[in-house]
Figure (cartoon, rainbow, N blue to C red):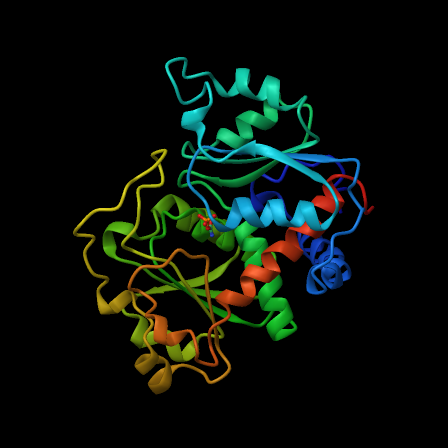
Length: 317
Ligand code: CP
C-alpha cells in the first residue's frame, strides 16, 4: 500500500483495495471525537485551504468540520467570483495555486473544469484533494458512501449496487472505479442521453467490473443491496454556477425511487444512498423508511474526512 503522507487524492482509479480500508480504519478510530461533538488537537499545527470554484454545501463544510474536529485551521474561498480567478484578471490555476500552497498544508479544490485539481497538484508543493471536478470525479463523496456502506452492512464485497441517474456525473465515475477493487456487481439505470459512454464501459470491462444496464428501476430494484441514486434533472457541472430555472422538468418514473416502489419490490434490508442535493427522483417521504441512509452520510462524511486528513497530513502512518 502506498503511503498517504503528502498524497494527492485526485481519482479513485489510483486506489487499491487496502487504501480504502486504511482510511476507513483511521476514520473509525477517530469517530468518537465527532460523535461526542468535541474538537481535538491532532492537527493543531496544520492548515487546510479550501478553493471552491463551484457551489457546495456538504463537501466544503464537511472538510472544514473535519479539520476543526482535528484542531486544525481552515481558510479559503467558497465563491471564486470574489477572487482574482473570477474577476477581470481571470487568474490562472497555476498563478492561484502558487499563492495557495504557502497559505496552508493541504488544498481542497472543487472546480467546474475536469482535471483542474490534477493541474493544481502539478503546481502545488502541498497535497491536493479533488472535491469534485466538472464531469470528472468526486473521490471524497464516494469514500463517504463506501464508509457508510461498511458501517451499515459490515462489508462491501458480495453486494449488488443499483446506480440510477446521469452516468456523466462525477460520483458515478468515482463509484464505478472504486468498485473495481471489490467483489461487487453494478446495475446502471440511466436515460439514453445520459448513459455510459462506450469508452467508459470498455474501461470498466478492462478493470473486470461486473455490470449490466437496465431501462427501468422497477425491473431491477429487487436485486439491489445498495440503491445509489442521483438526479437526472440537474445543473450543468461544467459551468461555475447555474441558477435555478422556473421550469426544471420532472424525473421520469424509470429513474425515481418512491416509497411505493420500495414497499412493493425492494429487498427489505436494501439501503439508499444519495450524495444530494436531490430533485424529485427521491421523494421526501422515503426519508423515514428503513432504507434511507443519506442523513447518516452527513455524519460519516465528517468522520471519513477526519481519517483522510489525518493520513495525508501525517498524524497517522
Ligand atoms: N455531495 C455533494 O457534492 O454535495 P455538495 O455539492 O453540497 O458539496
